[in-house]
Length: 308
Length: 308
Image (cartoon, rainbow over all chains, first blue to last red; front, side, top):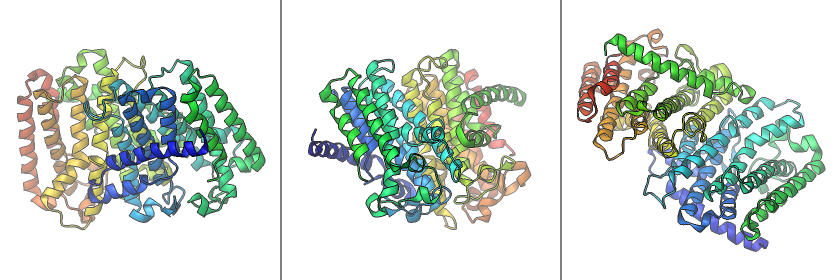
């Protein structure tokens, strides 16, 4: 696709995701909880995880059926809910103590710490609720697929994935991490959820875990997970806060290790390019049709060459 | 059962649950996260939710098959993980700021606030992981049952259940809540998870949501959820901290409304007895065999007549 076509494709996906999130994140939750949840997840960010779910779902043929489309939409919203809850908790004073996120005051600044913690907790539960609709609700996502999506997302979110990576991050402030530990941290902290996004899309298309296509898409997700973080570190070191919509240079200020502090700017950029090549090579080995792979291909370029 | 038989039954259930939790809550999680999770969930409390899952599973005939036993064990551990995470977060300084829980320092006192928040987050994810084992893992819980258990637990945990109730609780400090609002708060905050425990056990036995038995067990769970909280308020007002293993009288000190402040001690006790009668009446309408209902019957008496 041309950059313009990718923009049109993204916009169509994101308007569906935004509408679904707005419908599923309740206005009716009691005592202001719904407002805090909506503030934390709606109108938010680049929605890269949602785009990866949808792109992988298209690659795997999920979007040929109504149930596949519905499953991909639910998976996209669920992974965005998990990502958003992690940001809400990560921004709190006992963690990163950040006051600015996506150009707005963070949730605990706007709603108080207790409500922010509860909103994050409720967003995590909602992610798993969205993945397990009642029979007859929506377009009938088969229970076997529901269970598989929960399995992928729960593993990527918990101690073996995102939460585990955050624990390493916590423990690493002021430490001289070696490259292997830094990679392990990011593989879990951001990589696990990005890879899970691709895997959930692939599962929506019915790809089995022992298939060549599944393994290729998983390798793509793994490479993109790392590349995303490396580019994030490069941007954090080179772009001003108002471009990023969050406080720039925080990790360096907190003496946290980053790919830039470890590899230097040029080294980090080269590593990101190498991972892009790996990801594209994985796609070419997948056995899936080139046309169906186009969104994943284009997203890989966009992830590595983005400027915010 | 005699009180002694109930004690033997409980001990057998809880030793299985404790062993499974110890196996599933990882020692290997990075950077101390596993230790914080284990500290928060192992050796913990009365395990009432786990007992309700198992009792309802026996009532519904789940324990006749290996897969049913495995499903009930996973559901029991999952609901205990959710309950334990909610306590870890609830005890934090931005919420109840409690330093004592089950006679030990709370998780944030022992491990720091950031690790406590992460441990709670990871415990919630682990609950859903435990419910969705790989094919071939364990005794083969059918995916359709996996999805159903996730559906029940996620709804009971999130904004429509526990987290929503906590939000009302937060907003209620120093407020003159009327009885209807107090009931709504508790129906969500503690009632939803207790009812979900009974429903998960019933689902493990394959009871369908439109069956008389399902509806009877749900009514039992609903009544016990409320009764549990009322008795909790009575004990909080009448027992010393060392009997309870937590700081007594906190709610009254914080000027939070309780059933005792609203109904008086005698009124609260009468209400608990009325709910016990409702729960037993629901069981008698369930159409399930008296012998199979015995654990649920005995637990109902124990919940209402406990002294700590």
